[in-house]
Length: 90
Image (cartoon, rainbow, N blue to C red; front, top):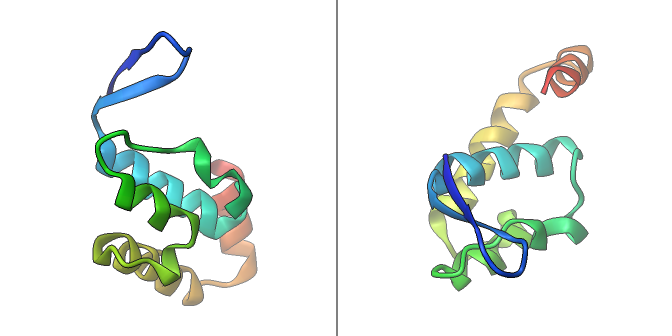
């Protein structure tokens, strides 16, 4: 991930948006972050994505919605011990 800190002490991602979005969705699904913290990841050039990250299951951006579904389906097939262990390692 390549980033740059701007004048507002915020980091601007130059490369790595997909990886950060995937990690963000994973954190959201596991409850590491709450939907109220969804403004912690925003993309200046992709306002539509910013709104979608607030509620990925209701997203109008198919990539966000389907990415969240993949994560959800994966953890539905696992037991709680696995999920908690994964969360702790993460």
